[in-house]
Length: 503
Image (cartoon, rainbow, N blue to C red):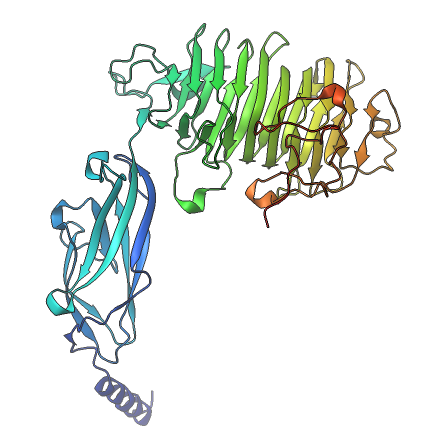
């Protein structure tokens, strides 16, 4: 490098440094800016850590400042923790002499692990503040967390140090058997509405036993967790119609992440698995949200399942995946699934009445309703489809063909659609989709919009502008809709009695 160039660079650097005040600060004057004056850390279960939340702090002045203290009001006793621009401070609670440059900002990362005993007993809120400076310069940002007390069910640690597991079809799952005489929880086969339940791993019903869910029960499943009902065992969900939007009498199964961004993320937990040989399964007023497979039902006709007044939303694979099962369903709503809203595969016996099946998944390999009589494999396994009947139903979605019929001619393939709204091309050369064939299709409406209230919010209600309005057959009438409203005559298609939409 030439001497002149080096001297020039040194001169420029000296000039820049002389203009900066990075190396001297003035005390904070209590005029910090904040991205929010209150941080809501959403809902957490007692003793379970929250997600991390961010507060941004601004220095709007033209001077570099030093903030004497940034601390939690409850000091070292606080159940909140924070880091300030990567610094951990004293036990993540107290920070001293934090420098904030002129016209700059810093990040405060906040999380908490409260116990229910830490919360206000009147509203179950746990509260603290972040204090910036003190005296006349004191500024505060409020921290709020709603804490839920819960019953935690999880695999136990065995004496050999390994974690409890259950095994089905030669596959081992991290899981445990529900105990009707557990020393801590009492009867784990009876889920009440007194406290929510949080499940880690696969909760499994012992053979020959019944698991019961009361109206209003709330069950939260951790990642890769679910419920297994094996041979000779039974699932009984006794939900009832609710009178408010809080769904106070609905049974709800969903993931255990309660933060707002997780409200509609699919695949947060595994499935409810009704295995071959489980029997007399009865489901009423159950809502399943954000699973991988909402309901996985296996069987050989003797494995029966009745599903009424139930909703399944945002499944990353299937809303219901049935394999040679026997299902009677009425007033069922399924919306949004990565592969199919409802898949009736490998034969079986199915009867669905006044149901709404819809799929607006963003992926490319999806459908709303898929029916087959075999398992796809190198040597396909074939089973008879003795019945697949749909009465007064809506089968709709984003794509031009939302019905997939996959028949192997070597086995029985019986299907029928009566008074249904179907979305499917009408010019198909495949005889399975001959909508003029009264053997399989009667009074079918094709490719007309049901005009759902709000698909993105899982509101598949209809009003009198819907193509499904008053198109049902009274011979298949279910007198009350999914919300307990009386159906008028002729009935509407789908799970909902039509009502005016809110303005």
